[in-house]
Length: 144
Image (tube, rainbow, N blue to C red; front, side, top):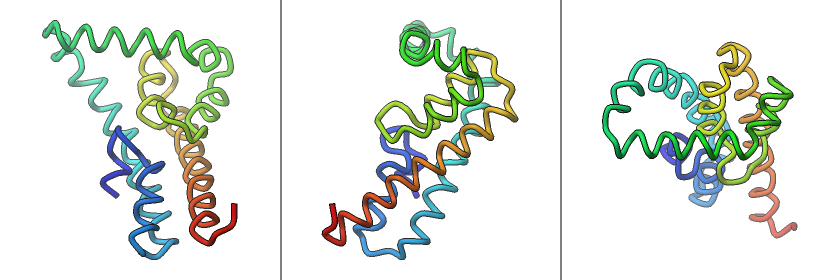
């Protein structure tokens, strides 16, 4: 579960790690999905309430601007253009940099309504987790 809330792995790392440790595969999926889902409200609280305090420090401000530019230049146009669906598919892709952390930052930067963004992130996380879970299960059983 800790990997699933970590920005270094999210459920993309938590699920394979838990399954390879011999834990119940259904419990691993549920626990990692739920842990990854908790990231969105935590990030929204941080971005809405705490972020502006940190912007006073130059090192943080430079980092925040770098992240914002990357988000806007990367998939930002597609997320802005397609809204809910763009965000959902962006979060759903099981690649580094496309999970709920990036989805939360995109929600904040593009002013997407939080209820819609949470739903898009939740669906995206679910499908991303299912892809990783299925791929890991097949790989562990020698198929693939």
